[in-house]
Structure formats: C-alpha cells, structure tokens
Image (cartoon, rainbow, N blue to C red; front, top):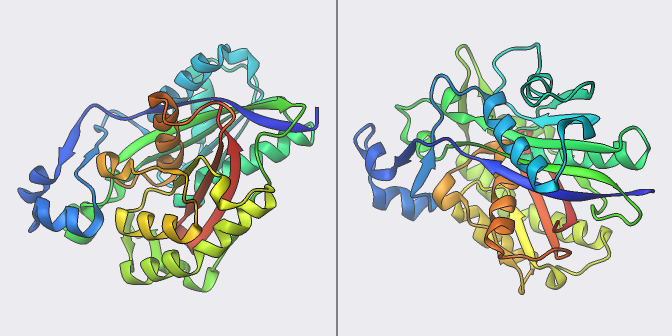
Length: 312
C-alpha cells in the first residue's frame, strides 16, 4: 500500500453553551453586534475540570468507534493544539493513555488554527512512508483558557472543542498532496502570548490576508489533487468567522460545494474547527463517502495548509 485514507471521523464539544445574550451580560456587546460582524450565535465552553486532552480523547474515541477499531489498532497519535498547559506529558501521550493505546508514537503539533491540516499531512506522510499503519489525528483546543473575557473583540469569537480522524494505509490515496506555508514576518497578527497567555489578533490584517492571499493558494491545493474547485463536494475552511469564510469560499470558486458554517454554533475553536465541522457534515449526511472535500486551515503564525480528502 502506498496511499492513505481517512477511515472515519468524530467530534466532541463540552455541554456548556455560551450564547451572545450571555456575553452581553459580561462585556459591552449585543447579539446584533456579534452576528453582524462575525456570524457567531453560540459557542461551547469547557469547564475547569475538562482539560484539552479530555476533549481530544472524546473525539478520538468516537472516530475509533466509527471506524470499528480498538485502541490497539493505532500506532501513531498526532494532536494539533495550541492550548496545552503542560510541556510534558504532551497531549498525544495523554490521549493515548486515556484510550488505552498501547505503544504509539505520540506527538503534538502547534500550528494554531492550521494545526489539524498540518497534523493530517504529517500522518499521511508517515503512513505512506511506512512509518505507521494507522494513525489518530486530532485537533483540539480550549480557547476559553487563553481568552481575555473583558475584551469584546476577541471573547465573542472563541469556543472549545475537538475533532478527530482515523488515517490508515490504503492502495489508492484518499488524502491529496498538502500545500502548506506561512508568512513569518506577519506572524504577530495572531498570537497567544504573555503570562498568563492571552489570545489577541490584528483583525483587519488577518481579514485582508485571508480574503485576498488565500484563495489562489486554496485553488492550487485543488490542482495538486488533480481537481478543479467546481469538482468539490464540500469546502471546510478554518472556522474563523463568517466574514472570512463566505468571501473566501466564493473566491475559491467551489460553486457546487457545501460550505461548512459550523462557526455559527461553535465559534472559533482553533485547531478543533476543521475536524469538528467536517465530522458534523459527515454525521448529518451532507456529504457522501468518496466525495472530494477541501480542508483548508489558516491563522496563527499566518500559517496555512490545505489538502483535498475523500469523505470516509
């Protein structure tokens, strides 16, 4: 086997829902202000006793169950997150312990909002090179822990959650070539810095970059997979906000595609956003097995990564 494919996906969100009306009681904002600017209506918030690896573990367990696999089938765990509190053990090792995966290679990747698509490419490369046979790839973030809840420009955006995919060896590749890169000189535009760490961004700079520079890159990711944007069944972009998602999707030219808009109910969950939205499309039956789907992450570091995958 010299290819890889996504065998199954899963997702998880905490039970607590924070509405725009709730936020209006915390900061100077309103439902109309939030929906008109970012399109978000609700978001899920993890409690103090729900760490990142717990969110990741729940999503991964659902993906394993959907694939019909036990924990001993996994030999690589990759977790994309930028909100791990401890340096060691990493989140991948903690997820492996939670699920009872016996002896996997376990690594975390921190590429913030583009984390999942970077992690998926890393697992794809490892499987195709023979370094792994079956991987768990997880995007999980607890953005509520790094948010300044007195700053209405950022606190209205964030949510917590996780999504996961089982990647396995296949005769024909169901994961297209990745197109990835970054703009390091603009990396300060999205940041989680300080003590305690806090999320901040230069919103207008990010908006201009995402809506002007990223469309040709996303189209090039389709070309690497041998597809035109019009061939796509779905487009799953990083769920930053609707004011970025909708113009970016339109400029990509995926005229026949379902466009994921999970941001409206989940907020910006950083590395969790793409697998979370993708898993929901699969769960709802909005896309069918074998359908080509563009996954495209972008954000922190002003990094980006995209690939066309086949729906499990």
